[in-house]
Image (tube, rainbow, N blue to C red; front, side, top):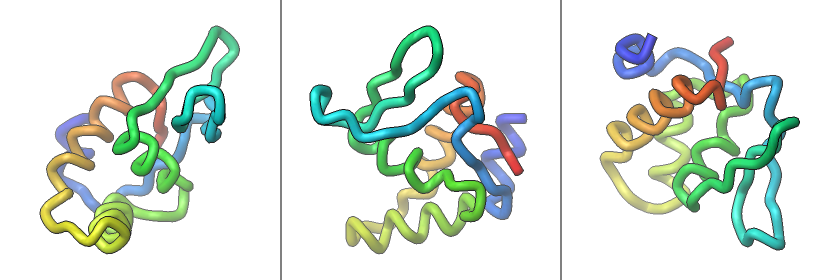
Length: 94
């Protein structure tokens, strides 16, 4: 599956149904809540995860991040993170 994530930017990720993504003031970060606990995300991971809405493709997420932060060449970093998020079951693919 991870090789498919890496090569197919048309795929659409969303936060896995067993998690809830939310901003946590106490943590000053985005977190993934699940019945057994919480995953605190760093800023980059939070920005990617909040765009995993089940409607935006990997390419659209990359383009949006590059525009929002006025940078280029984020594709590799986004795809690498999505591979990790897939292995951790933080995202599922629609």
